Amino acid sequence: MGKRKFGDRKDARRVKMPGMNQIAIDLKPNRSVSDVYINQKMDLTNLCKYVEQKKKEGKEITIFHAFVTAIGKTIYNRPKLNYFVANRHMYEHNDVVISFVAKVSFEDKAEEMMILIKIDPEDTLETVSKKIKDKVAEIRENKDVNKKGANSAIDFLAKLPNIIRVPLIGILKWTDRVGILPSSLVDDNLYYSSMIVSNLGTIKCGAIHHNITDFGACSTLATMGEIKDEEVLMPNGKKEIRKICEFGINLDERIADGYYFAKSVKVIQDIFDNPELMERRADEKIETSEIR
Image 1: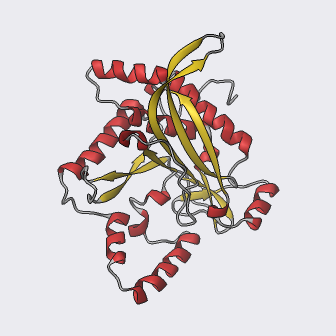
Image 2 (image 1 turned 30 degrees about the vertical axis):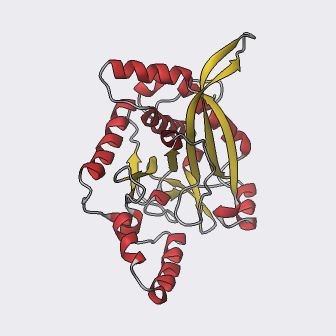
Image 3 (image 1 turned 180 degrees about the vertical axis):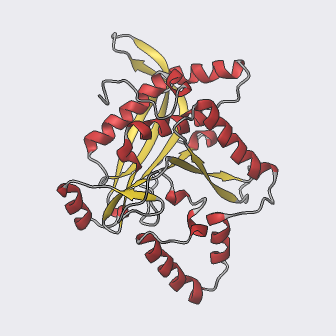
């Protein structure tokens, strides 16, 4: 990133916006009331075949790894997805970061940890997959791993008595709004990522819509459900059994219009249809009619 300019935050740069966006922010200053939902069934047939082939080649790549990579690649191609609103101004994250929550072990009472994966411009499916596996393995192989950043700060704050914790949280919310929240609460905080994702298919659950929050700097959230075989009418008029997965996507409508969001979803589908695209740099422009 270049030198910070007046109005920039340490984690993002301020961007100019049309008057319509500014008025929309003034009318709806909170992210939680600007939440819109997209429910989309997506065809993962080609992606499933691709992942199975990679496994035969000895590469431990999963559908979730591909999901995270595709989201990162889409954000590089659709930069407004990396925008957020704070203190009535529009900003763009300095980095592309995808976050999710992982359990320390597969037990009901197991502790959960926030995991953030930075998608660098040169990243590919293979490097993103390694980043995810390394992070998850770190917390599952060492259940007593020393927490840091927000994971540690949350535990500390939760132990405080109400008379101290409640006003302190109020102060922290103000520092969050003006962009001066302490680094200890920003590091490893999924609410400071570009997008929060969740794979509910692993627990045989359908996609859900999980509201985005006023706290933090994350404008988008996506969940993927269980992959199922469904009969689909193809463009040639014939019916085929395809691998279909339902996605639930939440977005802050103030960062872009519905047309921009709809085209972005189509870009993700284009990546799923052509998974070889994920073997290239994350920031490589995707040549598709949807984003020309």
